[in-house]
Image 1 (cartoon, rainbow over the protein chains, first blue to last red):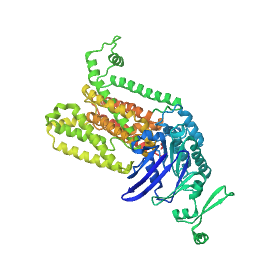
Image 2 (image 1 turned 45 degrees about the horizontal axis):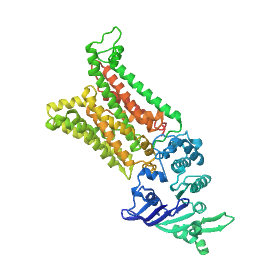
Image 3 (image 1 turned 180 degrees about the vertical axis):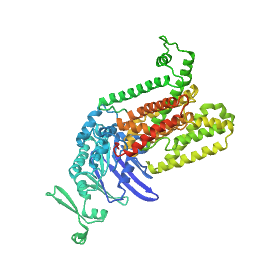
Image 4 (image 1 turned 30 degrees about the vertical axis):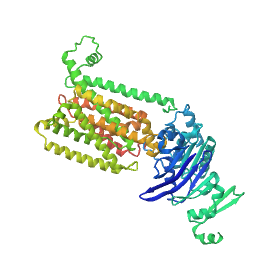
Length: 266
Length: 352
């Protein structure tokens, strides 16, 4: 289990993340939602070990993060940042191969092929990374991250995704979140920062709502995703419908010019 | 640890490229041995180098001395200096994640030059330094290079990202400062030190001797090995510093190895050959455009190609105006600068 206890992080004495507790269990997908500047990316960076929290601790499978080397950490958690820029003319398969850097796997070819087929990037393998479109780049980066935790292992592993669907078309958004939820079977816990509330409700088992650096609500998707909670977090009228014809939960944000109407309804 | 490349022809083509470059270097070295103010036929060169003597041409003692005491050490010095500049250029570009970085541009060379000058000018008056001799010169140049590398890195980086405009500005500022301080040192130099300095500042490999070659060679072996070993980390760093950390690279260690290794290689080269520009910039660029970006190939290939370029430049420097000589730095810049201009004009077509 990935445990974050009492996390606290300030930049110039302004708290970005304040007193956050988080448990990420293998076999579960957690979505982190919240408005811009709520501290989602900072929390993710603290969890991945990029930055050290000033108070509190992070435990990976019971081991404190500060005692794990970068290599040991790479074997149990993979991270996909929001933007990755490549500074040299690498080919696509070379980028994906890099995911296997710290691992000693027997059949690297097979893993690279499998993850690239999974993300539908195998046909791009001999292209130059710089020539890809934004969405293709994001899927290639996802392949690289997946390669890192693709091989079966007994130890629980974790995947941290920062807005993995930000530049993808609707079909690929579903594709990516489907892949992420399939990873649950591999003894992997997934944490994804998501902006699309419908996607979060449809794919995540667990929702964490972040506001002003505080965890406002955390729990199973069906319990936490309510109009009241979402209104409080985003300060914008949002309607949540439960319906079979919507295939589960359907969340709609209302246009600003109808705000008054919606508040009356609520 | 090692990720085997899953396309096996890639491994073969890499070995083939490196083998090809090595062959070019050896061949060029042998050709270079036979040309010069005192021409020696190619068959004689082969005889002296291999140690087997055959045929009717008699290898005189004069031939042997010219080859072994004058030409061979200067060619090896050119090879070592060119290799150091090429390799450190490639490694620094990878580390700074920017294809425009070069030991000369970011101030490594000028820092080394400043400390070397200080050693030449003031060193003779201190007996401690006088006994150290050439090793002391190399060590001082290394310190200067390291100091400037560290300063430039600190000035231009914040939160693990290197700002390229700050980097260039810091490099320009440090180059200007080093130039001014060199001028100041010369102002205070006595006649003997001034003569020493003038010879050194000509920036060529003409004054090569076996003890210089041995010092440079001995000081180069370790950093070359260490920097070559960073190829995977540099590949990962191309995606980003935090990404490299996520993939298990100990980023801080890589930084230290490359900064110290480059300062050591370039510093000792500068100490013996003066500042030679553009090799470190042009060579890695050329190789990336032709062979792609994998540092596993680019790092060793940069060493070999840098050595080839400087050997060629040395050959031209010795033969074009024979029996006189041109400084090798001039030839390297004459080849390098137009290429760089061409690169700037065509940067949109280059694969970035």
